[in-house]
Length: 66
Image 1: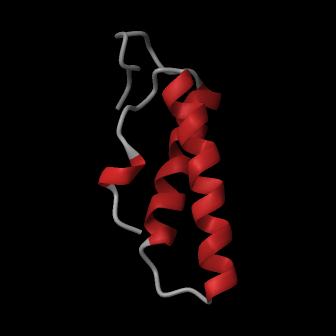
Image 2: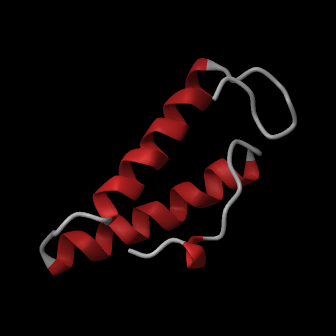
C-alpha cells in the first residue's frame, strides 16, 4: 500500500506504523503464552487507534479473530 485511505502518499514513519500493526495482527494469531497474548492484543488495540486515526487503514477489530 503506497497511499492512505484519502489517497495521500505514505511517509516513511506511516509505512513503519502499518508494518507494526500488521506484525501485531500476525502475532495475535500465534500460539503464545496467555500473558504474552493478552499484551499483544492490548498493543494491537492501541496500534489500531493509531492507524485508524491517521486514515492509514480501516477495519473493526471485532471482525478480526484473535
